[in-house]
View (tube, rainbow, N blue to C red):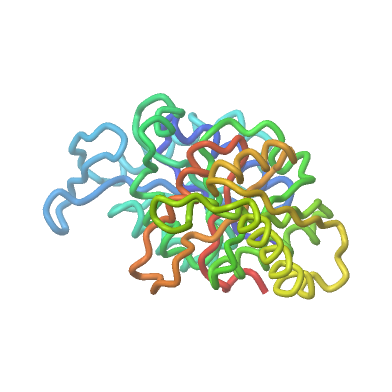
Length: 305
C-alpha cells in the first residue's frame, strides 16, 4: 500500500518521534523512505546564501555546506539508519512547505510523515499553545497524499498495528478519509472504528439541546453511517460504529484512548469550502496536538482508491 514515503524533517529533536514512525513504516511496508530536509530560504532571490531553518543563521549553500548538512542528518538518525534498507537523505533550498509538496509530487509519494511543529522547544509545548506549525498546516492543506502527523511519542504505531479510528462528520472530505482508512484497515487486518461525535453544542444560541434532541441526532448519525459508509466496505466485517455526544475533538480523543488506537484518520477540514481556501479544521488541529497516536490528515481522493 505504501511504496514511497516522505519523512519531512528539520533534523532537530522535535522531529524524533516522527522519525521513529517513518522508519517503522519503511520496514513494515518495504518502502523507499525519502528523508527530506529543506535547508532554508535564499537571502536575496537566487543568492547563494540561505537562512538555515534550524539555527536561523545565514549560510553559504555551496556543495560543502550541503554535504555537511546531509552528514549531520546521517549522524542524527544513525541508530535508525542501521536497520533501514531503503532510505535516502535528500535536501532542497526554499520555503519548507513548498519544497515538501514539490518533492511529494515529483516522487509520487504515497504518504508524508512529519511532526506537528518544528520549533526548537519541548515537543509537547504546542499542546499548551493550541497551535500547530505553519509548515505542517500548509503541507496538510495541499498534499495530494495523506499526511501523518506525529506530536507525541508513539508506543505501538505500525509495529503492533491493530486499531484504526476514522472520525467523520459526513462531509465530502470525510468520505475520502473514510475510504483511505478502510483500505488501510483491510490491508493490515486492523479493526476499523467508524466514529462520529454528535456536537451537542451546535444548537440555537444560548439553548441546550434536550435529551430527546440528542438521542434523535445520535440515531440519525448511525443511520447515515450505515447507509453512506458500510456498503463501501465490500464485506469487510472487522468494523464497528460508535456515536458519542459532546465536543467533537474531546470525544474523538476519549474514544481513541478507549480503543487504544494506533492511528486516527480525519479529513483535513470539514467545512464544504474550496480546498484552496480551507484552513486546518479546529477539530483536527486539537486532535493532532493531543492524540497519543499518529493522526492522518486526508484531503484528496488521489491515494484512496
